[in-house]
Image: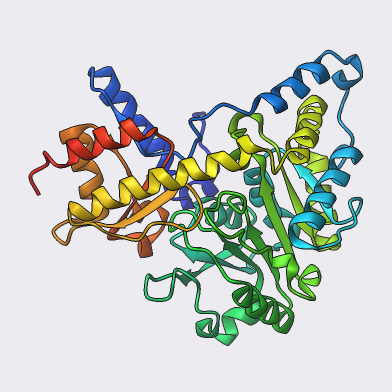
Length: 388
């Protein structure tokens, strides 16, 4: 008998970044010098003060054992202190914070904890692909909340049909947003919390980029009165501290949802290595250190250079207020895939076609600001050679 994968895999769209990576490898194998604006993986190393804490923790044999369920108590207390300092929000570190193996893991496992087969999951479009995939894995039915440039890349909550809202059990939000770089004001979160309370649904707010901002820190949904009754917010150390490979994040908010997610995790994983959790404590203790704040200025400068160059080439683009992404409207003669393919084939510049984030992303491409200024300028010089 030949092996056949589970049928649920056939319902998933092709994972965009895997396909892009395949194309890049082929181009590199052909000897091309690729300038890669594709994956959102910081180009700077993890900060030295965090590495030093890890080195010390690795030498402690006590950390060789299974980590504490839910995360090390010291880390959860440090995360509660961060919420108190940054957002003036008091969280119970035992009941309202859960340590994750990266925020992607928690976002992906959450539907297994809160969604029954056939229940509706509200998913933005365009969006990080994991939200839709996670809903499908849990047997949920994804329903799209279309985002538009005219709407500031925020879902029109009033436009959600009442029968859809009543059937929904989970709604994903993501601000600051990947891929569009939009930032949601606190007033939007107030409206989302009101909708969630009215229809008895849970909000999963992906806040992976909350600390990658250029002027004003974005709000937390948990600042809204009553939000802890209906919302869980997911944070990541990956972008803030250049720790993508370390796989450390956390969920905060509604205690019942946190407990349900913890039960799923208890059956599927054993949590992050305790030495990495100790490094996480050190990371948040230094959240306002110069090297952490300096990277924001670096991304801001990169964004200004790239946006100015793209505007000169005929792209419609606004400099982002947060994230390390530039979301650009492609010239009228192209769709997003055709443009991305053209840039890779003709000048070896990689960007991500917006359609890979959903149908509403058509007509846009995403550039990740994870290259130094000289490399960005070199890419712009190549783009000027393209025959449009």
